[in-house]
Amino acid sequence: MAPLIRWQDIADIVIMSFLAYQLYSWFKHTRAMQVLIGMAFLVGVYFVTKNLGLFMTSWILQELGTVLFVLIIVIFQAEIRQALYRFSLLRNLFGRQEGGGEIDLADFSRTIFGLARERTGAIVAFQRQEALDDYLLHGVRLDSLPSSQLLGSIFLNGTPLHDGAVVIKEGRITEASCHLPLSGKAELPRHFGTRHRAGIGLSERSDAAVVIVSEERGEVGLALGGEIERIGTAEELAERLRGLLYPQRQEKVRLPLRQLLFRNLVPKIVTVLAVVASWLVITTKQGGIFTVTVPIKFHNLPANVVLVKSAPEEVEVQLKVFSSLIPSPKQLDIVADLDLSNVREGVNNLAIREGDMKLPLGVVVTTVNPPMARVTVARKVRKPLRVKAKTVGELPGRLRLQKIRVEPGEVLVEGPEYLMTQFDTIRTEEINLGQFRESAVVDAKLVPPSPQLRVLREEPVRVRIVASGR
Image 1 (cartoon, rainbow, N blue to C red):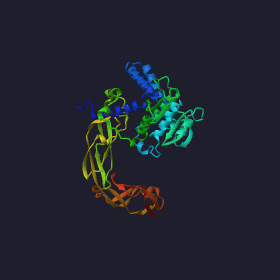
Image 2: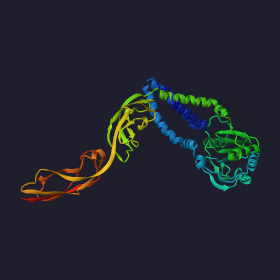
Image 3: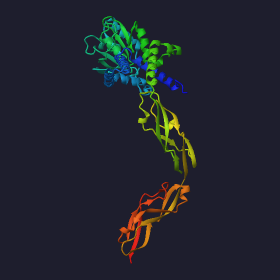
Image 4: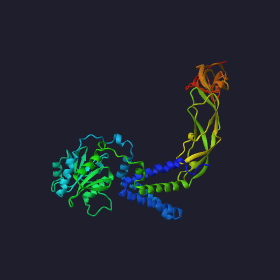
């Protein structure tokens, strides 16, 4: 009896739980997460209405789901691109490399707190691993070192560039007066203005570190990962930025495995339960067991042998489908393709396995009847056979057949060794002598004496018929 839960099912749940929790961690408190929650609610309503037999509601939700799926791809293409980038295992290899000079973070932090004391609003975004180009609008291109004099001039009230964000990439200011995407969080404090919402919004969509100076309160904040923390001193800001921008210069703190597993325990438990529930919905309603007739094919036959006979030509395969969402195997073109690379001369018994068939995910083979295929192969040889013209009928009138000459007189034929010993000649297709009124030369195809023989000549032979009058 097959186990109720396979190791593949456990791996399914673990992998999907990890991916789902990663998506939750990246997009929590964003509009994308709110839309996903709404979609999950609609999916739940759809399954409930379908099982209750509410045909109109379930049909409308099904059609609406198709449209919503396309709309979400269009509206949230930036978030989808961000998720794919973060999932990429090669982003550290082909992504941004450290190439710019190191910023004097102590001087930068003193400048920021100097702006805070003067109640001068400012916002500075540091690009880290992820590129920010897709999120920056209406910026003015610059290429300069982030000195205290330049930053003070940019954010001074009344200057052309003071309204917007400064972007620092690889140790240099690359843009100023940039407009950033605003955060969609509804729970942000009311005293947070556009500057704070822009900084948090950029940190939600990327791994950027955004420093924000409040013009009204003279406070300094650091937005990271969609969250903002208040920074009390210039030394604290410099230390935090040093750990974010130059992690290779910091001692890596490795958290214990227990702490990694049990941190944020409630969201992790909810994610696992949601994945298990989805797995139960998909797998508990199994599609059943089907019996299909599968033809047998062969590949990788060695060049020095020839296939003489095989039996059977098709087998009955019993398939188990693990979900009703998978199409019926009877609608699929399934073939058992057996590998003949290891066959030997004579009779070979080949086992028919699940790996010989291309099956969709969620479909497994339970039985094969018969489980073996008998394949007979023989050594392949080549032999020259004399060509004879096969004629029917007689020449008309007083014509008399003098001779028949075939060019070439011999052709090379390939086939099983035991069969080649039985033949010395090969004939052409039938030539009706009644159609000739004089001597003639015609082209005729060769007809192998056995279907297992192959003539190594593609062109027809030339048959010269010599006739004379009586």
